[in-house]
Length: 157
Image (cartoon, rainbow, N blue to C red; front, side):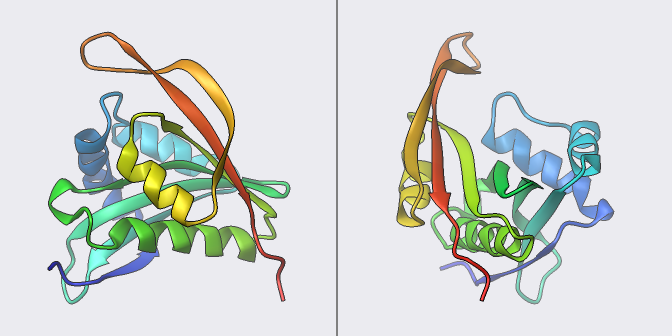
């Protein structure tokens, strides 16, 4: 069992490692310059999960708040740390940050064949609200459809 991770804000020094993890998670990976561009967009924030008592990053989440919506732009966990709670920690931290920034809705796109992600998102209240035909490109040139998922966030107390 992998030790729990601590979730904290993504720092500039983390971008290279986040890009490496992104490349292991997605065919159409974002390099360091793309991640910097994303983080420079208004309302965007990044989170990383670090192994407790270690500096190693095991996963990341990138999201953007605009008006009353938060879009999860990307979430990934290094393969050796999957199924140990880091994805859940990152998702719940991103949702909490969205609430703190007064977002009322949380949404994302996910490949329709990404069963692990669909289980994670469904367990956190996200439901299918849309469909994007041939949205993701695969390594072999084929395309995968995406589901758009959304959930309401709790009001601030």
